[in-house]
Length: 190
Image 1 (cartoon, helix red, strand yellow):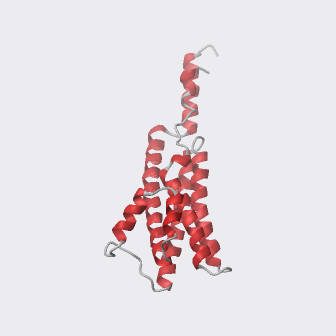
Image 2 (cartoon, helix red, strand yellow):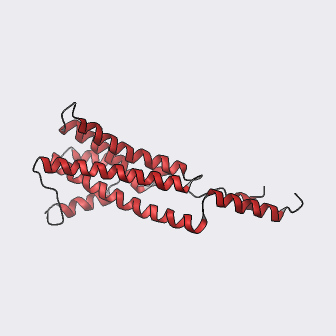
Image 3 (cartoon, rainbow, N blue to C red):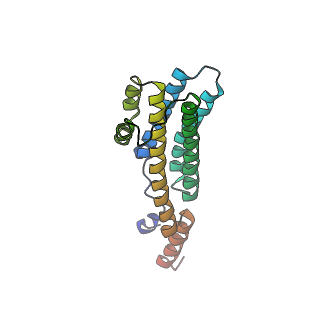
């Protein structure tokens, strides 16, 4: 097979560790784990639910990214599973605030913009973990909700690009067909 043909099989897929939404999902998992340990009672099923939702979000990003070279469809499906898990996690944080009659911050809250800015500019777990040491449960829950929104927004943009690429270029099956046709055209004697 000529080098000209093999390029069909090598898809440019970023390393999932370089994806901004993945790095932020790792931070979200770490924040959630620490939040649950600090504020929820051992034996509370909510702990398992929240930690598993955060883990599922992170892990499905990994699995989807690893599937990308052979299946755009699987990648997109798993990224949407990750989004659904993080939406579930977001709802758990919202429930926590509502059940305890705490404030869910919105654009009218004095600290809302500062929190959004911090989350927008911060992607590494270590920075979030240092920050939560100075925060109470209402602050951490609002930060986690903000992180959920931001990860979701970034993932939706990424999925839209992947869907557009699939429509324009096809997937592995289409690439293999193009490669086979090209090979036959270059080697009519075979």
